[in-house]
Image 1 (cartoon, rainbow, N blue to C red):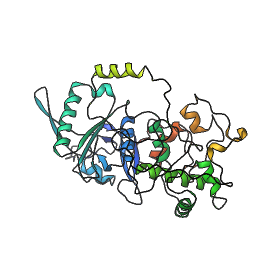
Image 2 (spheres, rainbow, N blue to C red):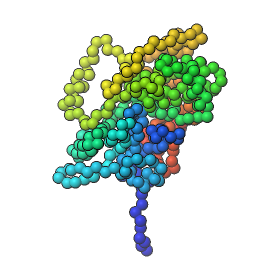
Image 3 (cartoon, rainbow, N blue to C red):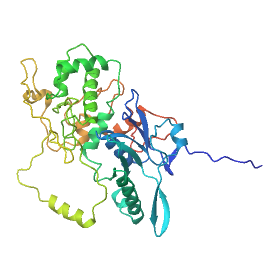
Amino acid sequence: MSEIGVRGIDLFKIAGESISGWIPSWKTGEARPTRQPFCSQMEERLLLYLEYHPQVAWYGRGDISSTFASTYKIATPLPTPYTISYLFEDKAHTYLPDVTGQFLDGSLLIAEAGLEQDKRKARNRAKAEAARKVAEQQGGSYWIGTEATLAGPRHANLVFLHARRQGFPAWPQLEEALQVIWPWGEAACVQELVERLRERWPQAEKEAAIWKRCAESAARGHLLVDLASVSLTRLTPLICLSPDSPPILPDPLPSELASNASVAASESLEAEPEPDQRVSIISTGSRLHPPRHPARALPAPSAGRRSCASRGDSRRDGPRSADCSLDALASGAAHPRTRSDGLCPVCHLQPRASLASCLSRSHSSPLHPPHPAESASHC
């Protein structure tokens, strides 16, 4: 028995790759976030990098069909799939970039994510050259994200903040209270701010509101903390700049990969650190757009408000070890009282190893399989 079939859409794959999870995005400016799918860990890191880049107005998949976008209700300001023609071995081919988007000035953004070894292959170099030319013709940029540029503490901190960006019923009242007890530009840690909020709200809601404000500030480029070198904890000094401050941009992604000779030379230079080299927990700006806000003296803590640096109760804070791992700090194993297990009233988070699952589960769909990085523990 034979019937005329109609070619359908694979709801579980993008460009032949299985969907691993979804990232909620607030770039559209709507009250409820939209969802952006990813098929690999590198794609997830790239999407999160773009989500917290203050110069990116919006972003979306460039390799999905219009039917896929309408099925999952994904906003696509640019045509999908976004096709780019290129030549390889004297033959014409079509390339679908991982991500397309726009900057605040309206210029085009094309971005690709993957392992550096794979992106150095001849065919992928031809794709990148064609995409780079298309972006430059429209006054935009082409970015390549690899494990060398999208890994490290910054990504772990972004996962931590993004999982706490969800709203909850008490957020409007707590947002107003934070404006009073935590002015823009004042340094304070979560532990101190919780004490300032008194006993009006539960502990979990107070901490959730503080982290949510930090996440919103980070998305606008107004969180004055070097996320690339500091692991966020309840004792980390945090500074949120005013909304009219110039944004602090993250380190830029390259438009092309450096040659192997250049990489070897840079690694040899990094192997010889300068004497007395120190890392500051406060961000001093980006190479792209350094902050132009004037330096302000922070107000001295009052008698009823002890600063984080002035706390000397070893039973409460405990000694800090220089080699504490990121997961130990996140889970509280290194400092049991540094972070609570109920920071978010919407989703009680576990150690950082399972934070990737929080992103996909916060907007889960019965149609996609779980992210490979998800662990057996649930949020």
